[in-house]
Length: 323
Image (tube, rainbow, N blue to C red; front, side):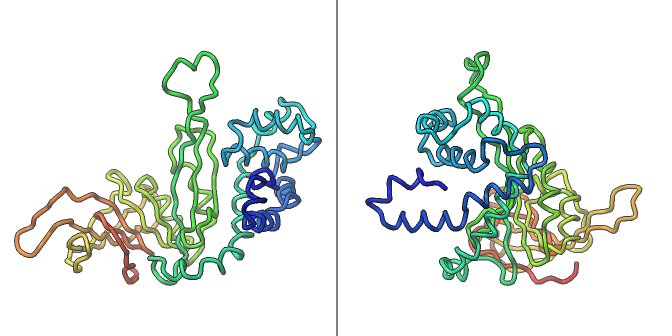
């Protein structure tokens, strides 16, 4: 698998040969087809293997071919494709999100033991709280394609083909989970539930303010995961549950903390979500308060802890106090 990607480096770069063997060992074609057979619900294999689709898309992804059409035409001229371009596009266009997610999840599981011995120093020097497995949650809208239908070619704005929600492990430097969304204009939060359902105790999730909803925070708390997320101006809109107290200083300003809570939805018996807001006021010194820039608002929820402000450099996790 991926022979064409590394072929140009094999003669002049022996290390590329080792990388090729590692990829073939970690992501063999038989395994890719097995993932497809296990997780596909609508598609099936007749003449075109899913491995062939992955190999052709890999050529486009790394820039060795300008498009899937170009990669397929060259494959057909060499003989290994064996199906029409229409059949190939049908296979690609109907790829199921569950199959794509399984490829990401299971490839990360296969590669993690390989990468761990190669990155011991990076793992030890990582600026993350000890005892947590860090997960970075972010969304990405797939860019508009230049290969448009005729009526749209004169328009500057192209139709977005979709979006992807990615869960990244910064210590292992691996994407460990992914949810593909076919609606590029839907809220990113709408695609979060499958990712949250796979959260586990001991994980620390970092996310932007679009994911600071009561539903997401409550679900992660129920799964035993800690969360570090920007606070949105409209939600979850926690209310103060105690005094705002100074908590020291960091490299960017004075630090304050305050217990807050999110009341349960109306008409439910759910308990209030208890959090802690930590606010960093940039540029504040002893004496009169001097704000060099308006403080940017975000929330840190760490096992029930919320934080406000802007922080740079190494972050230190607050102690859990059950609040």
